[in-house]
Length: 186
Length: 223
Image (spheres, rainbow over the protein chains, first blue to last red):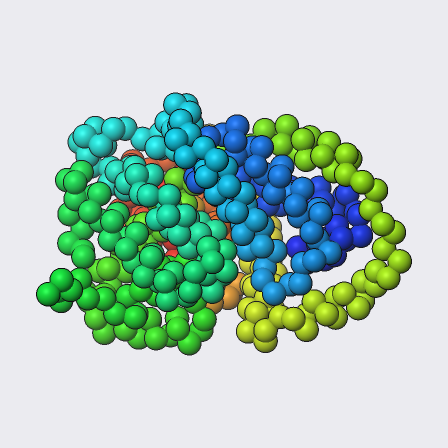
């Protein structure tokens, strides 16, 4: 079975097709939500934001030129909106329940280490990265964005994308070392 | 001097995360493969990248999903929007032509390749399902391995983008694995690696072994 491409859906949305909007939303809203949640760290805010992101897509569909993938365009809009919220509320308190989930449902570092579960510690360290580093790690590994696409979403040169990812990974190694795991790099 | 040799890193090393995610161009992927083949230290660092890659997916997959209210809110907002002007000049064919003209040849080539892979993967999955169903028809003792798709030992696998459907089918058959779900977010497939539940250590060893398979770019245990 062949599914309708995102680009075709956007063209239909530009013509006011609500069904196309539903399909696009169903296809992408979870990933957009997770991307935004990792930035704002509040489930209610993230949920509000995805409505806003898709409303922008509804409004701007006729301006989409196809120079990037639709998912890349969506993440650009989502990032802009998430950063706008963070700028308004820089001291936004982290919802405890959300934080627990973001910090992973794993054990605390000591317990996890005792279980020799390196993966759980690694996930905790991934959550402990700065927003800038979390963002680039997620875009590369989870959202599968190329160097060029990340540069477009974040608005930085491609060379900076590579070095930022390198330093995010370096920071990750440092955090792991603090928790007793020496990866032997860098 | 602040920059020590230890901190120095090569262009190739910077590309490792994208190589793990399968988002490099063919030429860059080839450069990385060649470098990995001749440099054990780089190969060790690539193993670290693959760990990060897997755990980042794991972490994101535990984040859950928004409630149904998100969609309700969206369509309430859309309903409140001013009526859209009739698209008198809207011409789908012209738009489509303009669309495809704006893509680079490389993007089109990747899109084509991805589509072919998706079709071949589906064919492989359907074939495995048919084979499995055929095997169910015969006489079974009560102690025979269960064909219940929920029973056994499972992993999440992401296959190399360059792997063909034939490669994947051969890999599954050679190891007596079967695809029981997917594709999921991140191009992951749920693969049953044993018809019976395995001890955690045995499953971990199997996953470690399969990490060395060229066809597998990501693998993790799952339930």
